[in-house]
Image (cartoon, rainbow, N blue to C red; front, side):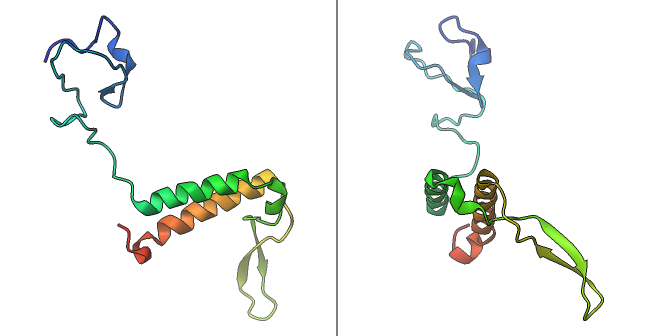
Length: 123
């Protein structure tokens, strides 16, 4: 296979089995670990259309002002029900800092998206 370093550079510059360095290798196609014979990366899963729509949705949320997310509070409180006597867990309704609410909203969006992928017909 030959030396992994290209043009005298260190093999430590490799990321994920694929060299980040581009350039002429003397017309010889070198195959690094993690690359198939086709030269494409064989690691990871292919992204679906819904993953890109989720990414765009998160981008839109990030551009919105923080003050719109004051009421997205994911903290819970537990109390004993007077009627049944059982412990009940409910979400708090207290306002939170806008940036914290925005993070909560993004996390909930991602969780909902990945949970319902199968219902959307995406594997």
